[in-house]
Each structure stands twice: as structure tokens, then as C-alpha cells.
Image 1 (cartoon, rainbow, N blue to C red):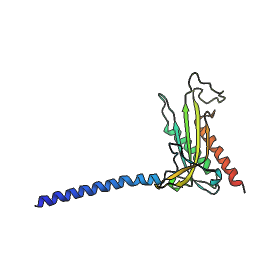
Image 2: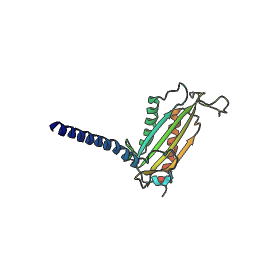
Image 3: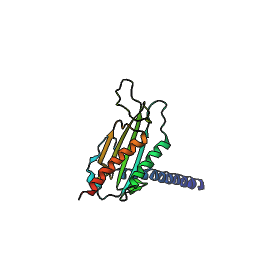
Image 4: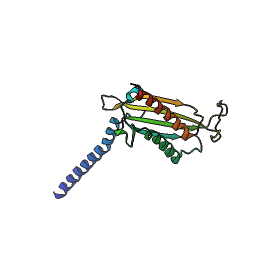
Length: 196
């Protein structure tokens, strides 16, 4: 009789623990869905906005990615950290902007995607005038600025693109090219904020 009660209690305990673990595992996914506006959707179905939407926004989240595809190419964590530091320094030089560490506290997000590729033998290459730039590499930089968009029925927020720029070959090194592209955005933002 006593063994039967113990077995029933074990089953209840295991069911309770299993249910608790399921709830714990599921809750971050729900939070991530609601706070996903700072990531570009894979289908490209972001809303389109205007740069003027950033006129009064102050806090920015910066996301930097460096990609070196191809055999034998290794993405350097140090190089990516250097790019991020340079970009964060660019934002810090503007007194009316503050960089936040978490996207959930940001008014807008800036995504910087830098890719270093080796062009094919047959592909035409523009002249490269930099002495320090590797002649066998092309650096492309994409900058996308996002704000929270419309709320979906499932509780998620759509990404809303308010500014974007893409350069397929910046004719600069990785660090300088990334910073140059972000400085272009900051110059445009300054012009918008100075308009009355």
C-alpha cells in the first residue's frame, strides 16, 4: 500500500518538474518573439519607414557582424570587436545619442554587416588605390537602421527599416570601411535633426 503511494508521488513530481522545465524553456522564446524588431527578417518583409522617425530617438543598439567566407578564412573575433568599438565610438561622439547594451532598451538599432570576399579570377575589379589594402580582397559593408514596427496579432513586432546603405566594394580596409558607412548614416541623421 505504501509503495503504491510513493510511486504515485514520484509520477506527480516527475510530471510537475517536466511541466516546469517546459514552461521555463518556452518563456524566453516568447520574449524573443515580442522583442525581435532589431533583427532583419529573413524574408525581407520589414516595413519601410523614414529617417525622420529618428528625430527624437536617443538610445541605440549596435549589432556588428564580420564574415569572411571561403576556404581557410577565419573570422577574427578581435577584428570584429575592433569594428564594434570604432562604431560605438562614432555614436558616442554625438552627445544626443547613447549606446545601450541590450536591444530591448533601445529606441533604434543599427546593424552593420561587413563581408570580406575574394573575387573570382574572371570578375572585373575596380582600381584599388590603397597601399595597405589587400589586393585579393573585396570588402562590402551593409548598414541597416531599424525601429520597432507594427505589432502583429501574435504579439511580435515587425522590423521597420528607416535607413539602409550597401557598398559592394568600399575600397578601404574592413575597419575603415565599416566606420565610413556608419559615419554616412550619422551625417544624414544630423541633417534630419537640424531641420526645423
